[in-house]
Length: 284
Image 1 (tube, rainbow, N blue to C red):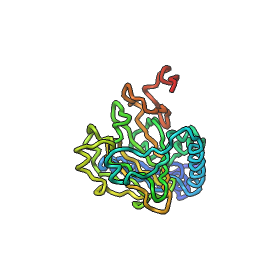
Image 2 (cartoon, rainbow, N blue to C red; image 1 turned 90 degrees about the vertical axis):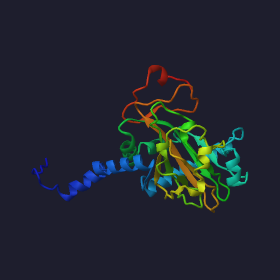
Image 3 (cartoon, one colour; image 1 turned 30 degrees about the vertical axis):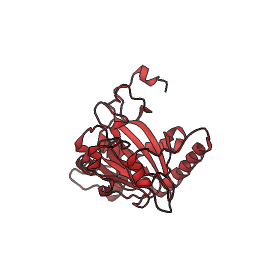
Image 4 (cartoon, helix red, strand yellow; image 1 turned 180 degrees about the vertical axis):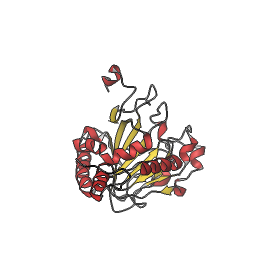
């Protein structure tokens, strides 16, 4: 048994063990929370290491190959609307599917990665429920843009606790069509007609060209609130941009009635206070 005298500094080896088991201390977690609450987003660096990303990318590519081989399904999720036409000239592609964890056990485990969970709980608190994940592959030279929008339009929750975490499977530069945001725009709250596919007076005040560019490396995760105005430009580079987005809400929140968007109800941390026998047995 090992004892530390009161008031004494713990030995270096014990500090190293503690940093491995609990890399984010209370001060660091508070700083993450403060930054997210202020800006409506947070870039978490190096959540997944190179070895993890290599394996996740292999699974990512396998998913893309599988969905593209299903000829009866449309896998190009390019949006419609005048802003899309302005940004891509009417010709772009983005390969997409929901819920990578239904394809790959490795991707399910990635959502439970301690480094990912620590940042999520710093932002949201102890109880975290997965709503869904989305795979996005922007092909080289013609990868689709996403006009500025607020995510709440698609899956509103009662308490508006919903956030997203974009897991970068590849690097994402400005030329590759990385995410752009308007810092602090989450404080606008719910603004009607901000789904990005229809014309909007508000969105016209926040052109994508003036939004803050958030470049990221493979293994980084960009978290943002679902009120935060965000979008991305086309991928005009020679590289493929690969991301998986996890949409999360607090365990004391729930999705508004009548919303038909996929909802996994999967508890990643803590407890789901709205789970019932009926909801657990609900047929999709």
